[in-house]
Each structure stands twice: as structure tokens, then as C-alpha cells.
Length: 428
Ligand code: AMP
Ligand code: GLY
Image (cartoon, rainbow, N blue to C red; front, top):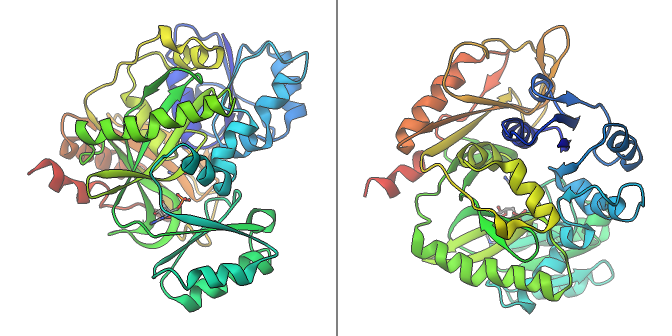
């Protein structure tokens, strides 16, 4: 098969790395890719939402499968674009259409879907631009902290947790009245704060069958001990030690199955990954949010644990044959730590030379913000994920952190405490 992967982050490098191992692969292309995908695939320097250019490339390269990594092209309708163009309609796309991507693209839509299909989630109410006063009134019924969410995509910044009413008022005013996130905050969801511990669960589905992928936990804050600003993700571990069989059975029965059934009842032919962002409250799972894709940096710890041919699985999903496939998972633990540019997620410098990545090491390297000029250099805040594996979480941590030390670039920073909070669940 000739395969086109859309995206240019660590997630897409991990996906491309795995596809590259498939005997079914002929040629691999990545749009736009990064310094890491360049060494295993052909990078094509076009934007992920430039569908006309993607069409030209898909036809020119005789693409047999398109795999979509990030949410933006999904929400914008890349799948619909392929389905509705008679020259492209024969090319399967792994990823939901724009209706399915609404699970991620509209928090209001996703919440009403959860409500309709009895999927446990925090109680909520949605408010429109014209009714800021109603939103302020609703706050009166709640106790802090207040959870306020812009309805649409806001580059991961659309959720604000406010610790007092004054902050909640000003947040609501800036979203609903001053278009803080443009179109995305013309509607807001206000919901109850859930107290618990978060985890990410993923399935691959073809709309009728599904397979549950390894669970993962990501670390979003820049500072150790989960302090400081939110980032795109500073690391992840898989599996999640507090998500045992009993808990995962509840996730499957209360969350995954009603979601698949709900999609069918809504006549949404969902083919792709579904990401369930969950809160474990006592021993029960609650939905926080759906994403219509793999997580990043969860992909960098999950994908190395998938033993099955991922290209075969994705193609089976995109063509509706998932039932015929099985999924094998490596029982080992994996840990992924993100090396970032000093200053990230605030201001940081780019163009720093990266050295040390070819030194013999057992860990894997998935590039995120890198590019190859005369030499390999940084081109983003999150530069690369180092992933190590081991029979225990401790062993995986050791391998990963050894790898983190080998790589050098000016201003390199990474969290040294990824996974530390979870050791207590294993050493009980
Ligand atoms: P989201 O973009 O919906 O994943 O929200 C970003 C983060 O906000 C989540 O990962 C949680 O840490 C937090 N969050 C969102 N909704 C809630 C909630 N109802 N209760 C507690 N924390 C939440
Ligand atoms: N790691 C969270 C996300 O991919 O949105």
C-alpha cells in the first residue's frame, strides 16, 4: 500500500514509525512531517488543511490509505472531502467524518450525546453568545471550582478552571462577549468540577466493532509535581496502574459500548480512533471529553506497545473489516518523556542544533518540533519524545531517562518526575 499520513508531531512520527514496519507498506508519505519522519518517509511540505493540495498528492502518489493524525483537518472535513470527490472516493481515510469529529469539535454536541446515551459525565449547561446573564446566573447554583469550556476547538486552551466567582465572571464575559476564542467561544459549556484522577483510554473502531488499545496517562503541566502552565503534554506512561480489570470493564460497559451504539444510532459511520478522556472518581469512570484521534503524547507510549500490524488494523478500520482482525499488546510498561525548548510553553527559541540522537541507546525517539536543514535542529516548543520500555514501570523510567540524557540542544528541559506519582499503585 502507498500510505499518506497527515500531521507533523510526535504522534505522527510514532504512527509513521509503526506503519513503516508493516510488510503491507510500499511507499510512505507524511504531510508535512518533521525531521524524524524525514528519515523513514517522504515528507510533503503542505498544510494539513489544504485539501486541494492533499488531493493532488494523493492522486499523484497513488495513495491507498490516508491516515489523519490531528483534529483540525478532521473537524474541517477531510474525510467528507475525500468521500464527496469522485476522483478520491475510492481512497479509504482512517479518521471520522466531520459529523463524527464533532465528538471533539463541539463540547456542547459531545455533552448532549453523552446525556442522550446515558454516558456518565459531569452535569452541565450550555450558554450562547446572546445570554451571558443566564450563564452568570447559573454560576450561582454551583460551588467552586467552576469549569468553563469554549464549545469549539481552541488549540487545547479552551477549558478554564476558575477558583472563585469573580474569575468565572470575567472568563465568561471574555468568552461570550469578547470572543476570546473567536467562533469557538460563541457557545460555552459550564459543568460541575469532578474530583478524581485522570486517564486516557483509546479504541480503534470501524463504526460497528472496536478494539481497546492500551490505556495511558499524560502529564500536561510544564513543572514537576504538576505545577505551572498547561502544555501540549510533557510525557505519558502506559499502562495506567490504577486502571485494573474491574475498572476497565466499567469503562467498556458504561462508556465505550454506549458511545459506539450512540454513533450508530446517530448514523455516524465512525472509522478511526476514539480518545476517551476520563476521570476516575472513587472507582467509577466519568467522561471528561472525547477526542476524535490519538492523543499526543499518549501515542508515543501506546503505539510501541501495539504488537499487531497497525497499518493492517487502520486499513481494516477504514474499510469496515475490523471484526476479522485481532489485537496483540506488549505487556511491558512504556514511558515517554518530552524534551522541550527552554521557555516553553511561553516564549522560546528555535533553530538550535540537536546532537546525540544517534548514540546507541535502547529508547525510541519520536520527533515533534524538529527539522532537518544542514543539520537537525529544533523548530518547536515540544522537540522530541523519548520512549523507553521495561518489565516494570521503574525499568521503563530508567531506560527513558537514560535516553533523555543522551540528546543535547541548547535550552533543553524535561520533567524528571514523569510516572513517579503512579509508583505507589504498583508497590502496594
Ligand atoms: P478538556 O480539554 O475537556 O480535556 O479539559 C482540559 C482539562 O481540564 C482536563 O484534562 C481536566 O484536567 C480538566 N477538566 C475538564 N473538565 C473537568 C471537570 N468537569 N472536572 C474537573 N476537571 C476537568
Ligand atoms: N494528550 C492530550 C491530547 O492529545 O489532547
